[in-house]
Length: 62
Image (cartoon, rainbow, N blue to C red; front, side, top):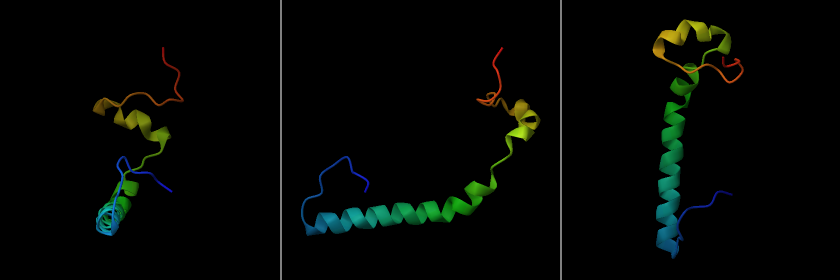
């Protein structure tokens, strides 16, 4: 169970909080496919160094 940063008091407040949470989940679902498709294998990292990406955590820093 997740916890909110505020107290929800009353039936109407619970209904509104649930509606907001459902909208956030729906937004996540809409972006999930696109977001997941942007993953790249860390073995391909050298192809992206021109983008200024930091070295992977598995690479030893000099």
